[in-house]
Length: 84
Image 1 (tube, helix red, strand yellow):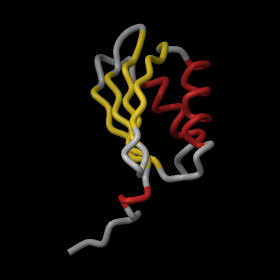
Image 2: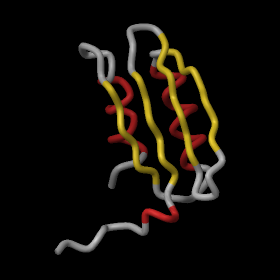
Image 3: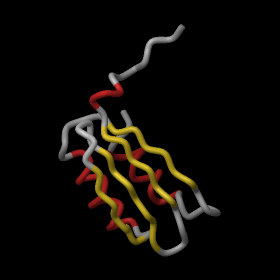
Image 4: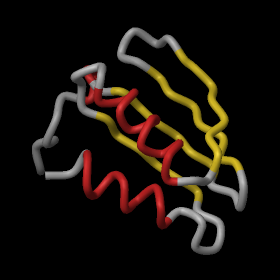
């Protein structure tokens, strides 16, 4: 059996529904608190969003439902700012 890479009790969970113009986001913190956001599908908003997530100094686990290629700007931002 594989060991988890991180303790999933201490992560921020992020669920995203990607669309052409705006993306729906649900964030859940380890204490169960949730926040819903709408993010414009532009690089500037993605940079702000990624900075917001990084400010909590906790690992993030994100899942997304991609529509067409509209998820690519977000993944580019994650690759540059979040992933090692």
